[in-house]
Image 1 (cartoon, rainbow, N blue to C red):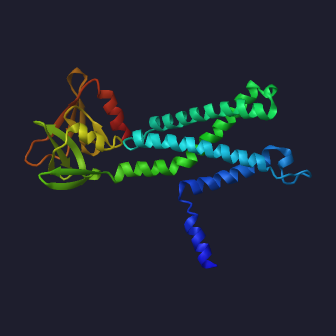
Image 2 (cartoon, helix red, strand yellow):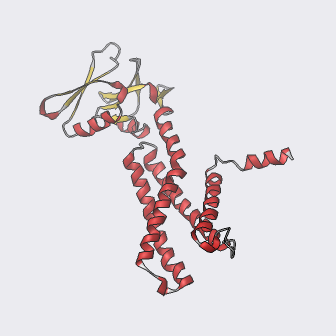
Image 3 (tube, rainbow, N blue to C red):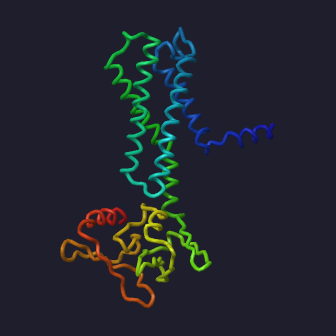
Length: 275
């Protein structure tokens, strides 16, 4: 008996996205369909198990989860691997709700027409049902993907590694070790938090595509910063900013860069958001 139970536990892993959310969808479908209609309430004298509405709810829920999942994967590959902020998250949410709205309108005018006839169409019912559905979907999407988004954010913040190949040697540089990256005489250097530098065969554009925008900022054509590298920010002539970086590079003077007046506000928004 214990062997059977352990086997079931191994197969039913609630850390799995589909197992966890499939179970939640089943519970919500059963509860909601028992509460929405008086005759479906368990203590009603004429109670009848609402099998068909539950099946329809589950199928619709699966389609909605698939839409949200595919959209999440798209954002994960295109945006979330580099940056996670409120703007990107809202774009993900509203684009997903947009697809769900299209699906809802299609189902309303197709299934509703087939089941109840064309006379059942009502703009009021359409808008009311759509509003309630979108509210539920918003809460559902937040619950479904909060864990995944947290893991991505943690991965971007902690576990990033840059593989540097130079002269037949491979060096693995953790994002946590990087203070800033700069280009000089067409050679790109990584400056670590201890002041040592690593010569790379990358361009700054190469590195920018490999690191997380969550933590790094392209200050100008020659420099990429981590917030830990900023020692002092000062306004200078023509609306520019002068930024003193740390640590001091071995055998060199203190490292200063300028931020143009065109990037000044963007830089300050990024900088203040990390404090």
